[in-house]
Image: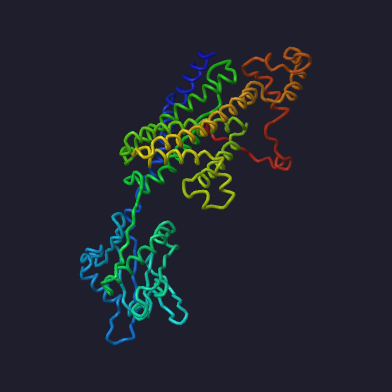
Length: 496
């Protein structure tokens, strides 16, 4: 039995990978599929936060103090900022670009800030003192920080007071780009608070407006967007690689008289081989992009993605063999992919989504793969809580193993039906029995007046198949459609 599996595996692999020039091109394309998807996506999203400083930001000042002896605190402050008096505070002015620069922290440097005084600010926003309402007009800026007409008066009257008493407006334009605006929205409170703190330090020198923040980030050098979102893109790339096998693989037998177990096992071995080659290519690519820096963590990540590739290819194979029609299998796999993307913790945690997604998240494999990736990249790779995080990885790998075993058993079971359809045209005992009776062959292949599948030859029965498909066609067209007599011209280049 093992020799037949080996022979079938060899024939399958040779046929699919190097039997013709077109097969070689398809083989290479299939190997590159995870690379095309995963690597390009990771590279595209590698570290957008590093360029968040290029986002256009405007500080608009409508402040006009009522006292003739008091200048606008904002205007005075921005003047000193422009003169580079606050370099020690992280504030500077770039003479070349004529833009204000603010270093919020060591990772966030805003280099595209422009300032508009009261006369120019009306072009972007207006403020109603009585209602404390702002009206922000359309502009090229992703974020506008506005100081109201009575800012200096209120500030001096109330001291530090509460920030909301000064009615500082923080406007973020989500219509320009949601992701960038979402980032700025989260950062805006800090930006405005920092600006007010620095104004306080200038206007009221004896006030300590500083803040001490302790950031504790395991493996901080990899706490960048490309690595974080890369967990999802590696999962997606691996799934897409497995899914793309549907367009190249077929259910043909390339060794005579294979039983369903031998047939399905040889097909699975080919799928696993392709998957491991895909993993090798994509991991070398993302390693060169920056993942090599994980050290031994990169090796563990490779092993995890390789295992996930085997799991996903087994799932694809199991679902493919569950349906006679390949189109139905494709549809089911696409739905499954959508559920993985939406509920698999790759974008947002499920608790930030609608309740239905929280329930679905428990049954999608991306959830467990991405959690295992996170434990490796942000903890094990840096030597942080290695034992605890190793247990997390093993737990999630164990759950993925359930998918592997479950879908392999499903595919193995359903391969019996597909094998019978190949050999006899149907997997239904009743239909095949009727045809064999008509052909006067039923007694030969029956036991106790019931069809005995074990007596049937383990190879295609061409005449039986022809009779079965004639009486029980797979697809029966409507009568109204038959009457139309639409001509069908076959494409000779289409390969089934």
